[in-house]
Image (cartoon, rainbow, N blue to C red; front, top):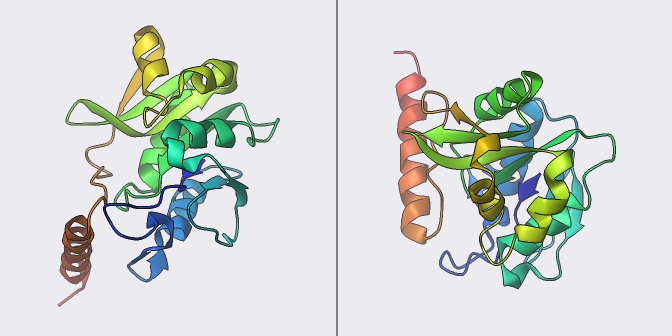
Amino acid sequence: MLLAAGSGSRLGTPKALVEFDGERLVDRGVRVLQDGGCRSVVVVLGAAAARVPGAVTVHNPDWALGMGSSLRAGLGAIPATAEHVVISLVDQPFVGPAAVERLIRAAERGASVAVATYGGARRNPVLIAREHFAEVARLATGDAGARPFLKAHPELVVAVPCDDVADPADIDTPADLSELRARSGLAARAARPG
């Protein structure tokens, strides 16, 4: 599931539609989830409408109430055959498929809740088993998303270190966007031979 419903008030435009390295952030987020091993992807939109190839889109009419309402809308659209959901945010362009793969591997080893960590701090993405969907949805309010559920059940949370494969830096302001675009450009130039 890709949460992409916000208006990007501090950025000045909905983040889902922002171009980054030649693709919209929403398309990048879908690709990351697919390449990481997710069989289907649900994208929750709200402030902006968009066609998103390769994904099921869900409109959250209550997007302005915060991430919690988008998480509830997305959980309601997860296919019945899905045993887990990986929840990712549209504004973290340096979270790649390897982080998603690690969460899925944790589930395969028996974790019902797995959270990517960076320097020991819990961030996104997050994996949650279907057995917890109802409680996650019930506790998701405002901009808290899955955080209240994770705090209520620390015994369930498996930390999955992702420092070496991802960076949770997010885009909230035009300065953030400029900085991350510059970092991405530097990395691309460094990777070129010669």
